[in-house]
Image (cartoon, rainbow, N blue to C red; front, side):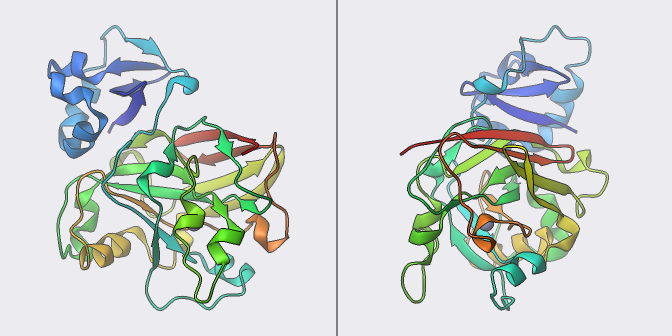
Length: 279
Ligand code: ZN
């Protein structure tokens, strides 16, 4: 098991409320880079075990955390991957994973501000897969062996930009700077009691908006990894936003406004807290 953090640009392992600098812990300076740490995910279990009894390098302070996977080559995102969300969107269930991209420059840390781009900006809490071992044409039965871990994300969406045109092209409306908060940690797959049934939720201020479980994914994680690898070579650090359950703002015509705080959470992984600020 491991919990990988990005503390002000350096890879760290979380133990309770404290963190251990990965390069210092391992004696390997190249592991200071969070992307190198993701690519060497198999080694992180032993380094996590070595935090036991070691003096920590700091207390976890969410305001110091940057994206646990800061510079992926690719960020895939899957639309309409929960039946409940497809229904509230009045859209047909897709015959294959409905895939768009969030350009990596949208990624921010777990407590970063979200800079609103307009009057129809929406929340979408999602589990996010980080590829650890790359590959092409990965079999579904082998897919989890290619996953470094899971984190939590918000697929923030400008609905006007997302849905303009016929057919609409989702990627730019979901790629404004700050529209991809992730974190707080990249959590190894073996940390979850059931990797295919992870509870997640989203509150805006004090109101519960979304509450679901990844057991309801139409295309489960192993299928997504296999499907995408049949088209693109997957590389260590590539991210997959796996889709959102029902309860987005668009369904009721309520959108984010300046000063609101989006609180997202997932079992085992932890929470994101993102304040909305004016663009
Ligand atoms: Zn989404």
